[in-house]
Image (cartoon, rainbow, N blue to C red; front, side, top):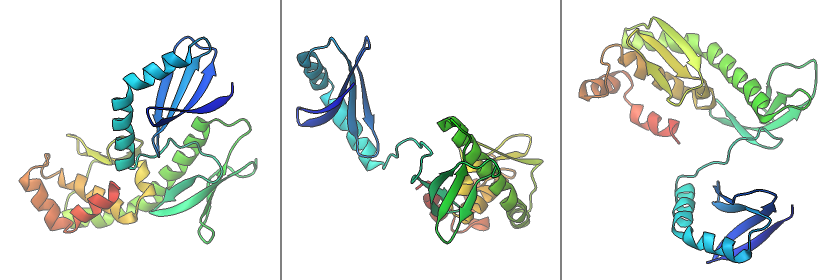
Length: 229
């Protein structure tokens, strides 16, 4: 169905009428665009009344998206910007049965993503995540040796996986690192490793833990800020 732009209560809305039973509204990053999917039978007045009833919520949501620089979901399409060790690369999809892994051109800042025919967003995501996993595995040995010498502690195991936190240390002394650290500046990986190693000494985040971080990673607060940007 065709899309149209309408303005209700000074809010610009992209309206699309579909053969559906219920009306749906989305507020999308990065600029807080309002999109409404409405049933074919619904009147303009009903849509207007709905938007008016949600105006306060819409404005709050738009403000939150803009103030927190919320990014739209990745679609893994040509031209999309992705990161590797703190540097930005432009994604370029390639269909080549001989190439199985992600390639990067540092001079051109291009990241080549090999995709199978009829690839879905999920398949592309998995291919790129596997690339980040391999990058982490390559970087870890040197970082591990350096950080364990700094802190004077060694974990029982170090694992890499997709997770909400940047790192985790459990009671069994196993450290887990977020594979997305491969997107960040290399100093962030070192900071997270030191952070988790300090948990082998002090398990919580109290004053003793912060003193350990001050001792073993003096600029940890600056790095933490960079990591969470």
